[in-house]
Length: 255
Image (tube, rainbow, N blue to C red; front, side, top):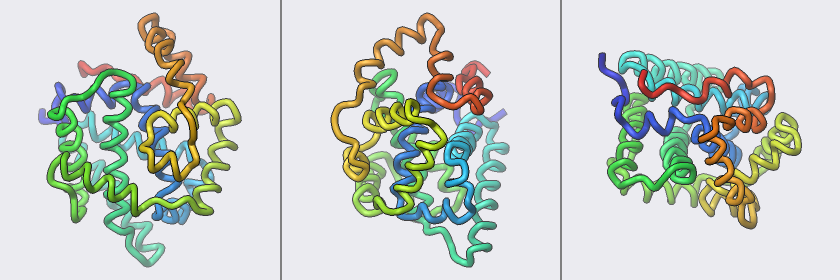
């Protein structure tokens, strides 16, 4: 059986760990709010109604693709395309290609950033491997203008950060929704995680100043993984209605 991502790939290790996924989630929640195409996520009403569910949905699709047999992964990608095509038909205009690329760029960048914060520095080969997986996702989606290697991605990623972000009314509303759905303590943890994982350009737009308190807490958390209480800590980060998702975050990589 041929899998979309090789069983020995670093990408499976990254997306098989609940803590790295939560960090990816935190970084994406910041950039989704700033993206100039965020109006598309507001169009259906799903994002402002339940932003955590919408972000979990995006992460879950990416995770399903990473661990699926190749044909199943292609079906999942085609399903994503069909959903977007339906939204475009209803609105009478197309989602710009750069908006799709931005989401892929987020998944690449935050996959690498989260693993390096929580585990170790990745080699150039491993970073290219992460890039290759999501490049194949973009290729299946028929996206135009994709970078051809990790070095070109880094250049395009920086251009995106300079050109495609904006702190506007949608940004402010989305952060109000984050606060509403998370509550003050979890919202504070979200901001501290965003301070730690997001690029400087994102932090500047969101006025995320200072050093993240998580720099002090990360060594404690890493110890908690060794004594198997990290599941409890994960459950404290997200609301109780996401218990099922939290339990499913860590995946057996031997499967």
